[in-house]
Image (cartoon, rainbow, N blue to C red; front, side, top):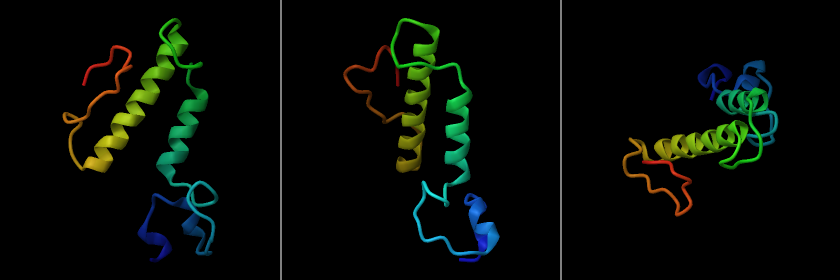
Length: 90
């Protein structure tokens, strides 16, 4: 794979091999963007009481739905919520 073949991994643009896995120096751009968004968002511990708690719940729920969609290569209409889905609908 040439460095230009996967723009999702900006570190590969240097042309130098990195032998640690994703999460180290080879963090995909989408992951770095998601971490940045979480760190600058108005969130707190998850829960139903405050707006910050609800924001955190929504962020976690959305990430789970996106992951399911990516793994299922389709829509999320077949996703099943956990028993404590905290009022979210599918």
